[in-house]
Image 1 (cartoon, rainbow, N blue to C red):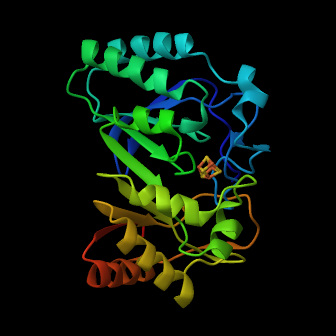
Image 2 (image 1 turned 135 degrees about the vertical axis):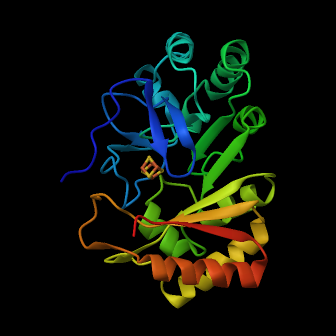
Length: 257
Ligand code: SF4
């Protein structure tokens, strides 16, 4: 089994998501190459070819907002029963140079066609200090932000971010957010964020940023890094219980075991 191919277009699904139920996906990433501000060792879409925060260097590679609106309108008319409309895909959605205008437009289309369906986003948290992204996120009903580490060394090893992205800045940005969920992938093997110091520093960060809850899981599909192993449900449940005891924040385990 190989890593997944890139999404061929803007709309995908609906997918039956473990966390979001029946969800229609909106992919704002280029289709010809993988572009993201992270290069996570466990990304199911393989290594990121362009690890960047400089969107203007690649501005012509992104779908236009007009194309996004056309595709979303078409999809929502044909698919009536959805639990969520989700900005996600095979890169970081907030990196799109017109993300704010896209969220505004999709919200208007949603209100016209499927009023009660919430908008959701899965984001790697790297653009939360951008004022335009912050305004856009205020229009999103369910925000799920990534946090895979509580210390810089592990963050750099597991997420391999673009130059200039540091965990301390992400944690500061998350402290300024409200009403969001944290998602964390735990892995072991050649890179391991389940060792004692990693768990205790991650729990400390969770306590400081105070999300509504955290969702933790491991990887169930092929990943690009060699030697990565899945973390057992038992270990994930131990992490969840300890986090709840130490922070009072609910942690939900997602595991196929
Ligand atoms: S942030 Fe998401 S899309 Fe980007 S490399 Fe990591 S897992 Fe893949």
